[in-house]
Length: 613
Image (cartoon, rainbow, N blue to C red; front, side, top):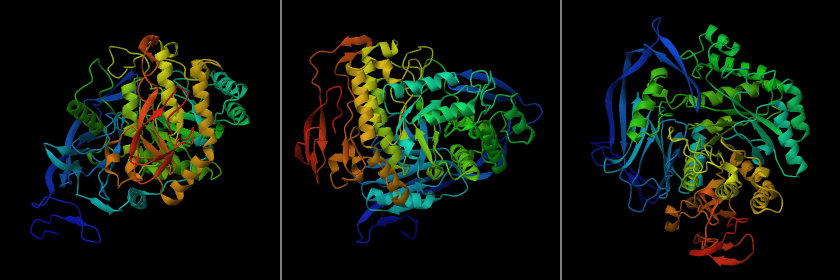
């Protein structure tokens, strides 16, 4: 410690410098007035519905000074050649965070986890639930928080990344064991409409002898326009208990989408309103209140869980956004401003990133109070440090179907898990497949959906990658997602999908063992290469390869080889991809058994039915 400025230099047991703060001190607290909203008799509400569901906005809201707090800033002098990973999952596809900046707020395609790990053998946790930014650019190298009553952070020494993750979970909570079925294939789309449709899809999987462990009931399971009501529409789901029993008889589990937002008028909303459990928009329940969380769970229990629902899809856990509209995507700084202002309108500015954590807590603890016979599984769109202790899996939000998006998703998942979070997934094939010019996010490349051979190729490659994620799940809108929608037996796309599906199930004992390690030893199954090859600097920038557990080097194919958009054939493209084999290990081709030395790049065969492995 530099006594005059309190600048820290961090060293290992041999005195080797790991990192340091600037000599001038590197820790800044800048006083700020904290504004909170006042909702009174003049406040009105207005409903709107967009591609991301119903939103209720409050109008005539006053803001007043509630207290004093600080903007905080924590600076570092990171070393040349050092790589940093973490901060959660963000849509840009950043991998090594050196030379980058990242805005940390919850949004449809952003899941915030304020933890970093370094290839120099240490980690950093910034204990803040407010808006944050990370910079390693012309503005400096630092972590900044918007509203905190103190600067609270943790320095963690590994030196291996697995040891750092262990320390993150020791501080923030261990990950419970998920049920075995959660590691099988999960079929989802926007959306299955009726009880009969759900059952018939599972029956078709069984008829074709295709493995399937779960089917998902997306939004609008409720009656009419009662958005967020946690009960089944009796016309479309006349006997939900029988439906669940029928699915269970077919050895399939049922996951259902639930929302923190309720349109005024439904029974759930009326109960929340009566007990004062709603935030200022009079539609989103207050997950920061233990009694509101208990009320929310009881509604889910009575209307859904008691009928045999097995798992939860907690959608829209941000739960506020302001940029999911318009033809032009706002600039990053504008998105930061409008989304954080929208969150601060309803939430304490010191807590705007923590809603998903508390929401997940309520669901987990509620189900555990009811029974210990069914393990909890909750799929969430947002995340926060410690959320893993509530049996959550985070997915990357409503992405668009393009090869560029697919490439970015690989790095997003690796950074999320490098943050100490064990379970991540995505919408295989992208959520938005078609393009709507009036909406910037509805930007898929394939207006013909599954009829476009270019989309079929993209879906196959995304599906092959998904088979090597902690949760294996297809989902999206615009076009069907069931495997037979991509062809029939004997046709190349169908056969390639079936091959990937069967491979996932061949590996299920291995994957379930990795899940056991995750619970018992704080393991990370989705592993950026420096987790296992930190001594090989060549791995620090490889964003499209990763280890899946200790044995498998996964190398997704992220460019088209057969068809372009519109089913246009591509000619002269070799069906191979470069694969770097990290130094420090010998390697075998999974498909042929051929042996290779590490520390070299090879050209691996990558026909449509094969992911280089």
